[in-house]
Length: 350
Image (tube, rainbow, N blue to C red; front, side, top):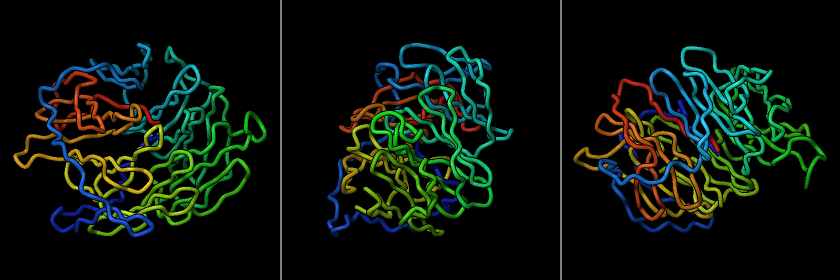
């Protein structure tokens, strides 16, 4: 599953934001976590990413599959997710945001949809969802090019799909055959729509930012000085924090990533690894006071113990592997670039 950096998140000066550790529903306060400076200069070269990633080079963009496959896609790619024998791809950048399925050789499928930014992916990757104007919601499932349309959510403007629960959206098909539910954000409120035909407001959350299985997290309040968030399990709040916006949940549900609760500058420089169950901070990747540290983008879990991030530091872009234990190495070697050039790398949504 994918993280969202919400455009609605207000700018704020760090010194004005009070620091408050995560507090569980029972009122327990988390202990201080070990910290690692996110200085990605001169790291060792590790294995290539174990998930799909895209690269733009010499005017062409390709998606690299974990088995070494290469799928050509449009240069204005902004998000993608493996599906069937190909990928669901989303394109934008000076053009309408559009979703379609492409085969492994880059051949496009039959359909094309105008959407809001972002894709949502089920825990096992069998369903990809996207949403568009007037609250319309669709899924593409494990059949590769089979598309279902859901009852729309009641929003004006463009909706965005955030999370999918369930691995088969056709009612009564498969095991257990319970269908699926899609968490969807409107401009001002979060909703869900299901294959049962149910549409309702998301409890507790104003904007959903992440979800995996029974876990769902998002923003509960937003102001000029930051935001507060909550993590739910089975629709019940388990813990709250005003230090983070909740991002990608690990494949084993053990941890969830926390980006800063406010947006400031070129991009985030602090990344927290939180325990999904109670919000305890297991590890913090942080900035260096002397400026020798990276900005990161596209934070995605590679496996239960490692996170992949796209980084920018000292005029170089790279894909870096971060361990929950604080380790760091290159997954994709650095490439020269500038703050004014578009990010050459993207990681799959999962």
